[in-house]
Image (cartoon, rainbow, N blue to C red; front, top):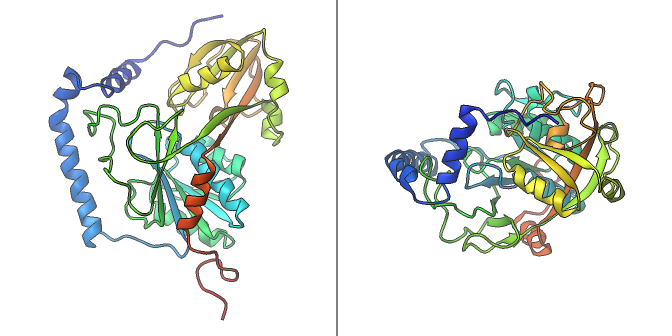
Length: 357
């Protein structure tokens, strides 16, 4: 089998910077002046919204914002999927808004299940296909949410994916997601990984989810359960067929190429190994477009994440048997109760905020 594609200069620089964010070494310290400038700009921006100089918009339905304090993937998309499923089980009709990172353009688009990831973004497309709820993308999250509500009047609550720093959108609940990195070196960008300062105490309408084996900050929160639900053949996954543990177990004893174009691919690889698979790791850049297949023809069995699968239509000649691994992710039951307790009751008649006369 050929070696993985060589890392680019940009990849190497990004890796060096991310490593520096776990300690207060020379590189991080050299970047402190830029970090102080970032802190001033971020603080000023927050004050402008808090004082009303910059307008904040409230939607006619409740809003739950899910986001990271840290840069990089901490588990926002799995958390959004878990929250959407919880809301649906509770009798709500949720919809999702997202920026659609990595797509071409920033205009508002309603996500169709068969849309191209280059048009709507890979994570919003995964949310649309996996959750089966309406999804809209747009740089302006308020405009995206309003378009979503116009097109889908049945939606009675909006979940904003990665909207923690999008202060123009009023929210009823904020869910902060942390992973095993905790707060890194505790410094703001670019000297550290923090997009904003971590609060010493949670606000009354904030919850924390830990995408890790245990809490990784002093903030009280809810540890999520993570496990592979199984795999499905790519064509079957596109048809909506469930992943099966038996199919995953059947891959033991073979050499599998494991491909992951996600922020922290080592997490995915570790879960595959914990399932008893012998894998050859093929990590890619987050949001890799798969314009060129990263594995050579004749690779045998290849396993990809669902985020990558949305960019691999089954009719494409793939040169291998491609399997899609599904992640099951759920915060503890106390999180479910805490989130629902923070939401106003659903209206039985007018879903956009007015009770029937």
